[in-house]
Image (cartoon, rainbow, N blue to C red; front, side):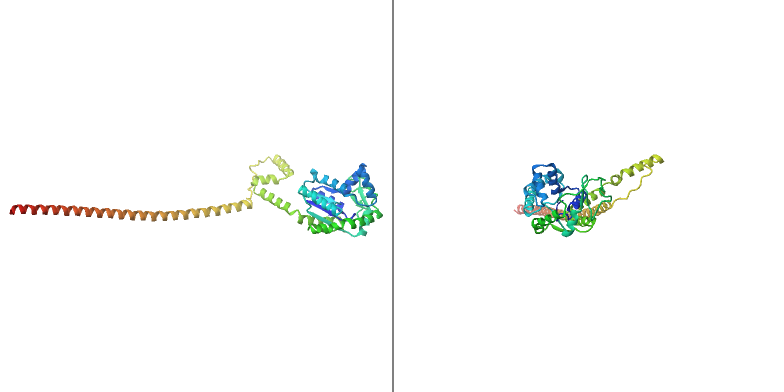
Length: 356
């Protein structure tokens, strides 16, 4: 999954991006974190960025794009990513599209957090960040259970960023309206933009995000899970039983066997055949019946053909025999006639000699 989060500073992108990264197991790529790390390390880029961030302006596109693309090419981003705070302008979005196009991994979804500007000022000015685990709290909306102590890791390093003040926030909102808000139309034209209401409880906002993501991107993953479940159902019952058993249940069964001393052979249960096997057996039975019917029909046809051929042969042989018999009779009659004629000729010859 490859998702971009859009919204004014303080709209809750960072909090929701962390929750999404945990649930969907993809990295959260925040340009703010990348650039602040450069400032903390006091690199040449960090020094340039420090002056720009203090004035509430945007960092140059070249610096930000190079930093982001390095993270996108990393092995941790192969399954996907959640881009928090980038792109911030149309040129950055166009450059991001071209570089992701080279990698064959375009942006799939863009979530826009719609929040009122006055609420944003309160959110940002009261924001507290844990320096150890990165958890985010707010003095006005979601303070920690104990003042100055992180609820997640117990650290006392809850920091308030220097640039999180009302004056800087107003400058950020102005630069956002000028440079970043056109991205809403840019991604809407690509049919990738979905608007999320950014005001309300964090859990409710996250629920609406998950609903959008699951309907837009995750159906393919759900199909894969169904396919895997059907494959496990086609296994033999013994294998499925072993696969479904937890280690704790197996150890519990072993303990009961040792205690009672009963054997496995006596406690074999008749396992119900799965519906898939029953359906397969029905299909095979129907197919075998059809095949048997076809075979019997073929045998009947072959018998009929054999009878017809035998009749034809007998008729032909009868005709031949009758013809032979008739020819023999005619030949014998001719011989008799010839003999009679010879005798008659001999008698007439003798009579003629006597008269002379």
